[in-house]
Figure: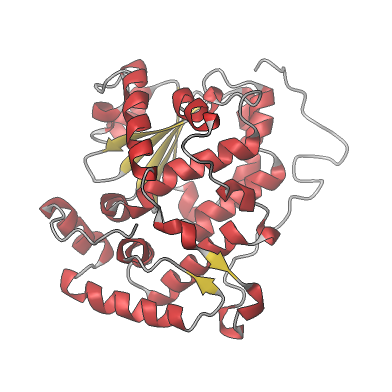
Length: 325
């Protein structure tokens, strides 16, 4: 299933695209033609011939073609090449697999809606993941499957995205499972080097003592630009509501918002998820053949250094944590 460019996009998003991305609707076909011409010179890549998919990378790059080319190559490479260590995160189950309902009913990653400036907000509930019911790989795959619907959403491409990360009730065991060094590094590379979503907000809610330690891992790889997107609000959602106009209207009642209950939102998204994936998704065709990669397409991925033994303090020492923190 290919997606068509929305020629009837709202005046708000048309103006936002013009203001923030320097987008000219009349020039979009020419940009797409140029990007497709470049892709035809990349024998190592098999990419969807889908205008909305390709437009997401152009919009991410503010129509700088060099940046868009690197991003789309990284996006395909990370999901297809074993050297990046996360190909299993893209082994998506069929809708009939029981783990799909297990994941959707848990409400781990919940799409909420748009705030006043056009950004689309997701709620990530870390404590909602039970590793006894879903393995780490299954959870990561389902999170990607949930999120990738919005790569093909033009409002998200233009307005960007935000993540409200709820750490309430998160134990040290859960934090360690979320922030394993290897997967934390891969997650940061995916976010900062490959995914076409333009991250506007990372809102940290009810950080636990265990997370304070784990955050050092993520912070090690965070770019300066991404650090500026972080909003740490402890347990005070009003701080986020004041900082981000319109956030209160889309947050569930359980978080002091004006939206429906969390369970109602989860149930609605479950229907949307199944409706979307009942059709063939264009991303399924993505492939990478390294044996055909030309010299001109080498070294697109920025290096992410490993954390040495001294990063968390003197080698051989550790920070004790209460397992119930």
